[in-house]
Amino acid sequence: MLSATALRAQCKCGPLSNLIIPRAGQVRFRQVRISKPKRAPWFRQNLLEISKPAWTSEVPIDDVWIDCEYAKKEEERREWNDEVNKLEEFYVREMVEQFEKSRMIAFFHANPMSRNSFRTAWQNGRRIGMELKEYHHRVGKAGLRGTQWENCLHFWFQFPGEMNLQPILFSPNLQPDKLLKYEKKVPEFHLLGCVVENRILSRREVQELVKMPSLEQSRGELLSILNFHQQRTLQLLQSNQQQLSTNLSQYIKDQSGDSSS
Image (tube, rainbow, N blue to C red):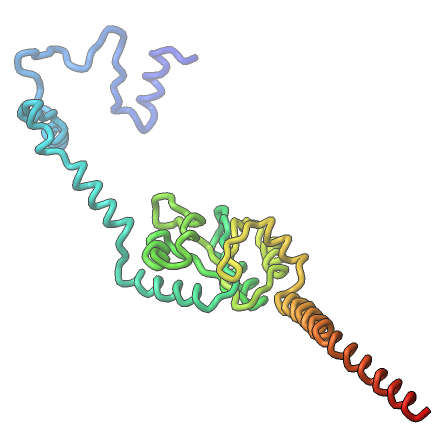
């Protein structure tokens, strides 16, 4: 460790030869004027002027509510959450059109994902004939309130912020098997619920729907069952007439045989 004398000698030889190192017991100013201290620089004077404390006038406790802005802030927040701007009005019309022409509407919980990953998910949806969209909660409330899809608002992201958009997959055809395969292709998505033929189904019910026959097959089976019972009813109603006709024919034959003999 260098001594103070060696350090001073090194400073005199180097580029910091004009640096003065205070010795033990030395102070910055030899004489401190307490009654009239040294004036601060101009920048520090401005900083002190701006940062000095300021006290408002005392307000009686009974009049504190007059200056309260909480009600105005709440009213502004309520208007922001319920009303939509001109751009979002186009999104509302687009979303309602998608709901009207889609037979299957899937809602997903989306983990954080990049825009490239979302575009890949959109492309996967296009390959199977489906359309992936995302809408804000304000758009959903403006378009679905008072309609048959109002209960779908429970699936929306309701956290504050403009980046919390709800991904929705629209399908013009009933394809639950392709929907489950699509969910496996997008690891950031988790199926919350699905609207099938104007009925909300859970993920487990969608899995059970895959095992069930299609609507056309069910209608064909129901039609065959109804036709069978219809034919059986006609047979039972006509059996008495056929039996009576057979008995009369046999009676006539018997009478004709007796008269000839």
